[in-house]
Length: 109
Image (cartoon, rainbow, N blue to C red; front, top):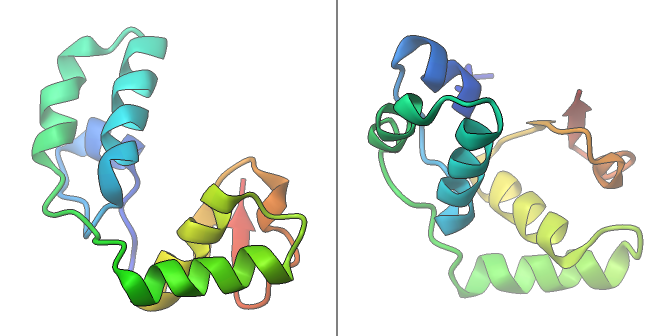
């Protein structure tokens, strides 16, 4: 499995993140950098974002299937899982226990 780079990795070492997700990633970077008083890290983190993962119709349809089949998951979590499946990503770093028990996904906390 290829190594994934987290936003915190980007803040630490100036690495480039492979295909981050939608505008929410930028919001999360802003939130995290402000929360840890690292406003100086905002631009390098933004620069590390190579592209935007498009949530196209097939991914949206898969997210719909997931949210209808797994009542424990939020709509947002379902979109994350659909994008992960599309890109072959099997692990997610989160404290969100909603991902626990979803087939093929391992939550790292």
